Length: 292
Image 1 (cartoon, helix red, strand yellow):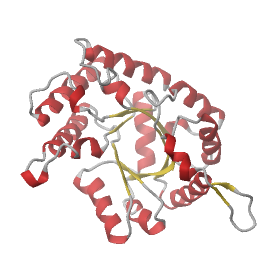
Image 2 (cartoon, helix red, strand yellow; image 1 turned 45 degrees about the vertical axis):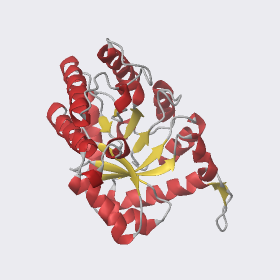
Image 3 (cartoon, helix red, strand yellow; image 1 turned 180 degrees about the horizontal axis):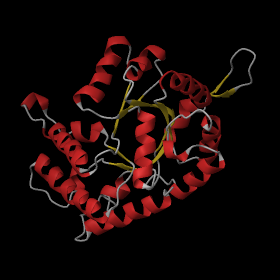
Image 4 (spheres, helix red, strand yellow; image 1 turned 90 degrees about the horizontal axis):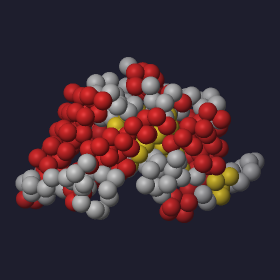
């Protein structure tokens, strides 16, 4: 099964295009025993079990590797964070079979180095897709698209405030009008996608005008969209849905992501007694806003 088919089938199965970011903050966990792996395992076990029982299933999950690997201390022989991520991936496979897992690692290097990162994502972690930084060019991107059943989301117009520093720079190509760099990257993403059908774009929800421009450009090219920035970053899932439909974009190929609002909406405060209810409330709201 190619990645586009996996996206379409999981959207049909769940009835939504939500993506749940799984980026835990150890200090925000409701239980702190001092054993990181055990605490993360217990937290996600409770959350996933409640989601499964309630029938609240997003159409994708997106763990960010940095949130787990920063908890490792390899020189001391401690891989608690990586082990916890392995536990999470096993749980997702058990609780939510058929739902794609997007590894958010934003890798990108050249030649053999990039291939090593692709093998890390697809063979070591067995993810369904990975985020990729495209700014080193085609020899950096191509190793990630040599896996025909896997997806690669290239950074196109990101949701962070600093994204405009480079992505909005105006460029001029021969015999063309000037246009922002993110539009040039979009053209390259579309060209990559024509080869495999599994190359997508990361486009933030924090600037709806730019999102509409990019979604309109992609609307007839079947480029999967990963749309972060909903929730704590200020983006609106319902606003994104409106934009995608207005642009004529095939919404079943999009995934609208929210992270901290679903896993620790209490932020830096101590977890309240009803923490699980808060997570479920926000997840239910996201699913309702992204229903097909």
